[in-house]
Image (tube, rainbow, N blue to C red):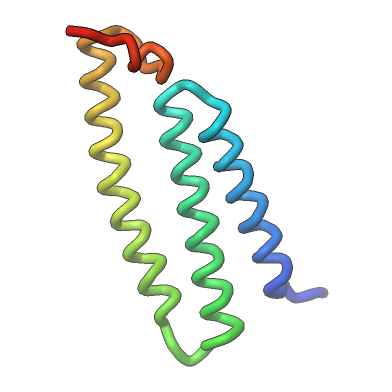
Length: 104
């Protein structure tokens, strides 16, 4: 049985990063854009944990950075969802193209 190496983790991280970037740049729905940002942050977390395991196995710096990113991402998601809900209540749309033309 083969062990999952650093290369495997980096390939998964790169794929998540580019899927998130593609989703953020091509989608116009604010919820989908928020999910794409979460994919990008998760790819960064995988990098932190992978490099921590393979380069500095005796330290926990990568784990602590990952926990910090998860906490910041949770706060960011809560604020973003609150803004999106507010926009939907006021304008009945969460499309980014409609956000440019919204006037109250």
